[in-house]
Length: 216
Image (cartoon, rainbow, N blue to C red; front, side, top):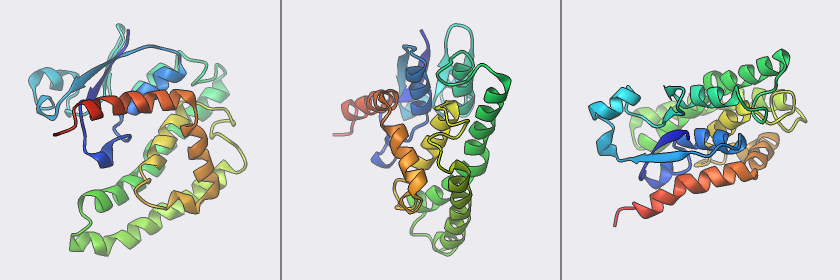
């Protein structure tokens, strides 16, 4: 059975955002059970964990065939053997790959840049000075993303796929702001994805240990 590493607890702002949720969601969509191996922050720098994940992050993944890290790569690995996440035809697969990398390479850097300011450096003078420019660059990309989505429900050939797992996760990392609400098609897209039973199960499973291991 696949094993996914995840944190026992993270601060509230990160709950629902830690990237093991991408892998959990993909496994749920693919109909695959898995075990979650929970680690604490104290485990991240140990030689044993660095052997699985060189950067000390989560998730690390194993399924009896492979051992992997990097959530996007793991989701892609799962998708390659699941019709629910990746179509069988070459053109369909190519479009899923295109949008999966668009989420990671074109949209996420702008989301992350804003999150770094808002969540970790909001009171710094440099952050206050930089934020308007960062938000403007992000909004330009979101304008383009909404235009590309058009009246479709999902990005790759209007079929839910692994690309939507990554894109939804990236857009959810803006939920500390009201920015996505300014893009009605993208807001509806995120809501559709979050309504999927597989996402709800993945989110619930990620959140459960956070309640159990919450600091007193």
